[in-house]
Image 1 (cartoon, rainbow, N blue to C red):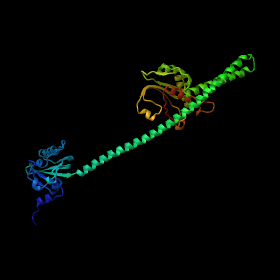
Image 2 (spheres, rainbow, N blue to C red):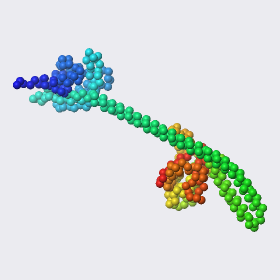
Image 3 (cartoon, one colour):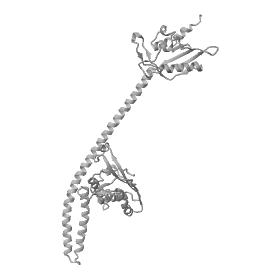
Image 4 (tube, helix red, strand yellow):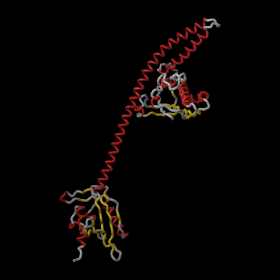
Length: 397
């Protein structure tokens, strides 16, 4: 049996191999390497490595030559193998095919062949063409990016539809409150005229009766009932935004500070009152009596929601509503505002209850425990002052 032809074996090896001299001249090449680089043995053997495989001149970021040269120098100096990370190293197509460079990616390993004296005789340059893998990975990354963009677009469209639904619900609520307000205002106005007559005639009758008349007590009850009815009509007028205002420039911090002692007596020892007043708070133009009524009504509601006691927080702040806020809050306009936030630790409200809390005569309290006009009055006062309301509550919170 004849000795094996090692050159034939090397050239027929399935891997892509190049044999280099210490001066980086090509002295051997496998067929697989020739196929991968679209070259011919007679064209490259005996030539310098970087003369055959230069950087792509059309790619200013090309660094294949520099990286490979550095790796080969490490092999020569350390006399040890050097594994390189994946490299972009474009290959020039044959002249018959135009001679243009083709984008390629490689995973190179450079290994020394040492002589008996330890000197580097050759360097075996082995590469794996990973171009398809890199392209697939790139496509996967691009596909992932496109998928994420599509998901973001879908989420934005869903949010847009939710915003539309929210605005539609706000519009319907505003239209309902406007209709109820007109009705309540008309009824309150007419009823107030009747009450004026009732109270006036009751006063005249009482003035014409002897002080010991048995009818005097009955007439006084008529007067008291008329006065109580007058309070209700004023609340309805406030809800319908028809009350006569006396606005002036005032600071909410001062109003809350002045009300603090009164609130303590009103709410009782079981309710802890906490104030968080913003420094340098902007002033507002509002009716001071109406502002006090807002705070008192909200405080009483909070107390009723905390039968076992709790905490009431009164907070002020300067806020600037941007252009995006009105897109989801129909009754708001962009611009500077002063915020008054009233928070309690009560039992909370369901969404169904929240949708009706500003309606006149709606109440969750038992018979005789509330008129259902407290929050309706607040609604009218705030709207007449050019403000807006926002309610957040969860059952049990």
